Amino acid sequence: MNYYIQKLHELQEISSSTQLQYWKEEVVFTPQWWFLLFSLIFPWFIWWKLFERSIAFNLWIVGLFVMLVSFFLDEVGASYLFWTYPYTLTPLEREVFDPANFTLLPIVYMLLFQYCRSWKLFLIGNVLVSLFNTYIGGGLFRWIGAYELLTWNSYYSIPIYYAIGVATKAFAHLLERIEYNSNSRAP
Image (cartoon, rainbow, N blue to C red; front, side):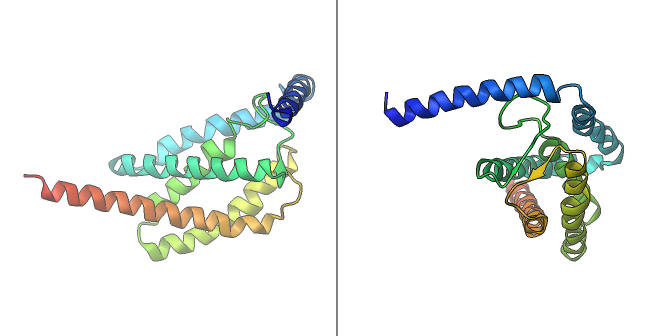
């Protein structure tokens, strides 16, 4: 095996072992851990009451797109040590059940998509969502200690959240157009 690969493997073993020990002793069943579990599950019950069933498929597409994009961007940011997560639901080095990526952001963008159908209204709402996600959502997770900025500034997130919203709406409209065109051509 290549020397560097071997060295990286050894460091990974040390890191994984340390992460597991830290998680067992300092994280699991703390108030922060319970908050993360609650924020992963409970918002889906609220969303279930609010979502418009007639556009459920489109909303799921929006939610899944936001999950994928936010998870990918979060992995990049955490890998480059822009931020870290001192409290996580699992002992994995990269949190796979992050409430922001898999619950909160998808639900916020699905509701934005549902209630702001026109582009003009959506773009205005997207500004508010971007500010909310950055300062209220991110601020809350920093306040409880579950999210820590290392070399990142909060305001860098505003255009990223905005771009996620615009890309999501554009993607959803593209899929709607494809579906409409394929249905209109059917015999």
